[in-house]
Structures are given as C-alpha cells and as structure tokens.
Length: 473
Image (cartoon, rainbow, N blue to C red; front, top):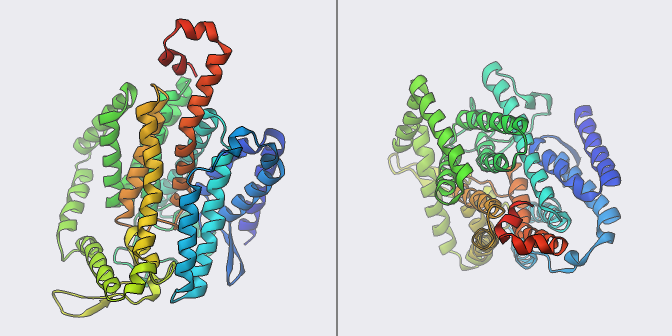
C-alpha cells in the first residue's frame, strides 16, 4: 500500500506541476505515459464498489487541471462539436439500457460508470486539449517510452524469473490459475500488464508508432534510441508467445509496406533482414514459431484447444441469444458474460463444460449488450478509421504518414479484438482511446498549421509547391 500511495502522489504532483508551469496540453504526454506503464494492480480499494487505480488517479487529476486551467481558455476549436461524441453517447445510452436489464445489475452499473470515468472522460480531455502536431508527437513518444520500460521489466522477468508485479498486492484476474481460461500465461512475459496477450496487444500498437517516430527523428541520438526501442519491443513481443498480437503485427507491417513512404519501407526491410538473420543464427526461434503453428492446428494440444475455443464460443453465444429475443436486443448486461453460465459440449468426450473466459471482445460485447450494442461498437471503431483513411488520402506528404500509422493501429487492434477480450481491460485500452483522439484531431491540426504557415509566409508559399511547404512544418 505505501508503494501505491507513493506512486499516486508522484502522478498527481507531476501532472499538477506541468499543468501549472507549462499548461494542460503539456501534461498529456506524462498522463499517457502513466496510463500505459502503471499496472492495473496499482490500486487502492476505497469501497467494494470503487477501486482507485493509478490510471483513475491520473485521469481525475488531469480532468481537474483541465477544468481549472484548460476549459476556461477555449478557443474557436473548442466550440466545435466534439468528434465521436454522438457515437459515444449512443454507446453509453445503450449500456445504461442494457444495465437496467442486467442479470448482475451492480456489476453492470459499475462497468458502465467505469467506462465514463476511465475512458470517455479521458478521450474528451485529449481530443479537446491537443492543439498542435508537436503535442501529438510528444504523446506518441510517451507511448514508446512507457512500453520500453515495460520491455525492460519483461527482460528481467524472462531472464531472472522476477516480476515487477511482485512489488504489488496480488490481485485475482480472469486468467489467474484456477480462475478460468484455457491458455494461462505462466512462463510468458507480461511485464506490468494483467496478461501476456494484452502486453502483446500494446506492443503491436507501439512498434508501428516507433517506426513513424524514426521518420521524424531530428538527431542521430534519437534514431539510436528509437531503434533500441524497436528491437527491445520485438524481443518482448516474441517472449509473450501470443499468436494474435504476432499476426496483428504482421498485418500492420504488410499495410505499412504497401502504402507507406520510403523511409518506413526501408525500416521494414531492415527489420525483416534482422529477423531472417535471427532465424538462421538461432534455429530454436524458428522451431518455436513453427511449433506454435503446429500446436494451434492440433486439437489435442492446449494451443489448438484455445484456437478452437474461440469458434465454439461464437457458436454457443449466437445460439444462446437466438433463443431469447430480448437478450439478443440488449444482452445480459455489461460484464455479465462471466455470470451467464455459457456451456458447451466436448465433441470427443460428450461432457459439458463451462465457458469461463470470453476470448473475443466482439463476442463479449454481443453477449453483454446484444446485437445493437455490437453494431454500435463496430460503428465506433469504423468512424476513426474512416477519418484516418481520409486524412491519409487527402493530406499531402509527409504529414499524411501519421494518418496511415494511426489507421494501421486501429485495424490491428480491431483484428486482435477477435481473439481476446481486450476492450476495456488492460492498459492497451487507454492507448487505443488516445489513438482515437489523435486520429480524430490530427488531420485538422495539419490543415490548421498549414493555413497559418500560408498566412505567415505568403511570398514563399507562392514560389514553393504546397507539398514542400507542408514538409517544412
């Protein structure tokens, strides 16, 4: 407990100090850093109905300084409609409707209120406070810095069999041995995250961001640092032994290779060559990857059972909702899956078994809030993707590259949602919502800064191509 109190005190003090001396916007990167780095186990149980996590402390403090110093200084940008707000309100409203019909009312109510405090409030502050592309870059650098520290903890965990989480009180999670789930994460690197797969999720988002930051690095020192970060994140990704994040990273690499500009392609080629070299020099790595694939295809292996589990889960959930029209509409209530008693039949033994984990965020949403809730979630995911896609196709080079990276992040996260319950659980949730905020604001910031540049330098702009002028930003 003293450690957690000390961490929270430092978080509050630093956010307030930065906000007082440099403004609320400059406090955003530190807040993003804390949200990714701090474990969910870093929490103080205030009451049975309320846990005060370090992430929640950071968000509440940020909200307080925003109200005190940021909201009162709103410019014309702040008077515009908040991006995604209608979809967020629809999702929130439907969650409340589902909560009123929940089989576990208090659990669902707590989950809904937590989403407001931890996610929606955070998104609102970021989307309203980010006013420059440089702030966007600072937030992205904070993501990478937090993940690298997590990777250092992961390295210690892998080689010295000691986890930084040993310093925190033991908290029972969904994948704690004996608490459900077919694939436990014992022996897999998870750093400060509640599960190795979730750590892999965050790394799958962080690596493309690091590649982008390499393209805007201004010194050799920055590039050396970022390459160190990339290699360390790749190593930890491998050590998570998580198939979904591996595939998501491959998907991200393919999209970047097909649509990105010169430097990112060169970096991908370098990483590919390094990967091939490692597979040749260390054949054990190749054997691990090959065996993972073979085990996934083997129905008698735990990995194969985990793979098949997801298909069985979808079938059983759809069948259960089909039997009850009302539940198909509004579901069983937010976070009700673990109380709904979903059961299946083992095709080989004929024995009935209980689905104790929901290894798909989409299935969990479908069960919790019905098909309407699932459609609202899909709409919420698609909107920032479309904004990023339009930004990538509509903005000139090189500023449009970040739109592509943010789009790749969102596609990868949605892909990972199919195989793990990562929506609303784990630090990567904060990452994706901040990415949503950046995706919704970045194209407008680029156009705004380009407009200011045109006004400030009319003669130069008249003589230069618009692309050259934007590249100088």
